[in-house]
Length: 126
Image (cartoon, rainbow, N blue to C red; front, side, top):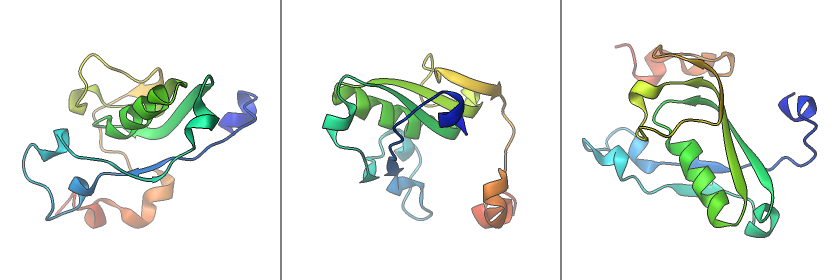
């Protein structure tokens, strides 16, 4: 829907995972130094010289958006970031914000596509 509304022809997918996010593998403070695993990422030749819109649902710590934007920048692309919800209080990047966002919040949000992994499954409410 976003691509249609913005008349975007090319849609590329990036998948990034931070192993430190998994229970039992994280030590306090490690999230700031987590090394991302790029599971899927477009070739540099597809990014170079292009303006790229990086879209995610939420910017909590900001790692996914910043990591993808930095890799696009390194490939010679021009990244802009876009999220539904921006949570500045929990961001690991003070002073750095998404280019576009719909709302600022500090609330825990369960999106419709996450109903099967509610707070009990995610370990939020115990």
